Length: 503
Image (cartoon, rainbow, N blue to C red; front, top):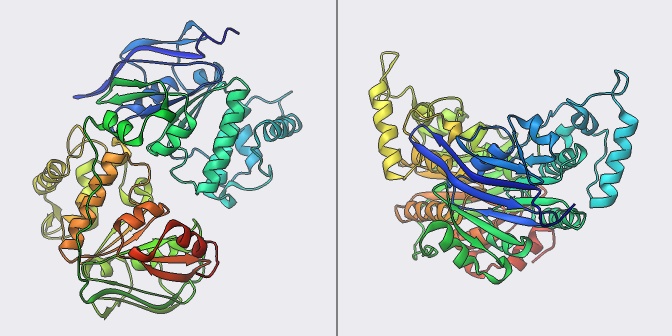
């Protein structure tokens, strides 16, 4: 095949959702052996454009060409048939089935039976060529997040993908997992595959991609011919249309303890257990929680949010024990919560945004009376938060699940901050967010700190924790490995604690 002919070419593609112009006359091409970065703020139209290419949406205008010839892609089966595979931010896997079962789902068999022997040969071939290996007999529910993503990539290759779309692939990966993915991607392009790489981690984009296309408000606003020679600051300016200045963390003198865990342990939790964890958060303080994924961070978040009752130890808010224990009680005591998984734990994505934004407080006098909802009050609340937090959506009745990741995170922030929390616990606050949205989130946290709120911020992004935190605690195998003042911490020092080494 002539390598100058694109594997895929999108010409003049446009898509509108009601009043929102998601894509407008977009051109994009990817050639064999090329990694093309697709950049833009949350809500810029990147995922919509890729969903059109993968057949989830139909374009209002424009055309798609495969190997230089017009193609009609009406659904994902059409996309797979022409060699397009997509790994979404939220994985599409059957957790109760094995790796092999997930690979074979939906594929025709041989003589009416699934060709497991042939599939095993193909799986070994993918492992050999791209260093992507998984035990075919493992259940997906037993796989770590990074392994689940690897399965999604393998599944696309297994079905013959020549063009692979990766939407925020490293948002859930530890640094060593991300590097393993990059090695696999380079092996794929050496083999003639094309890749579209969507990421807000600009350092990764600069190191991995051959060129980039930048979207803003659904339009192509720039092309970056040499990403490695383009600074992250310049990329951010092209994405946002203005310079991005990191927020300043003003000096603050922490006050009284507002959240306290004393020798808290857990039992029977799905992930790593907590073992004698003692931590405190004071007024006007941000306590960062660092650790390699799976070392007890989720259990810690669930305990503080009232979702997981400790098997031992004591939790206090404002010096008062949490009794009776539960999410409603901690909320009544002034705790706000922004969970790690905004799509399943944060918002009810099938509901209108307005309903999802008031759901945790739907029974309060502000939104109901004598058992009846106050639709006007609910809508007015959502409209006000949309205005104040610049949540980009068609309006309060838009389905919550239709919002981009950054705008959904803004909606969660708006919901919790509107009720002036005494303590706020946040997990992975900027995962998958563009640099502008991340800066917005950080500014809100620092504003809360100034207003004497105490914050516990759980993040796998060490630079984020060093930017925001007054102190940083490191979890290792469910225990507190150490607590450092941020001014004394470094990525190297935190890394030693995260690996179990003593500092």
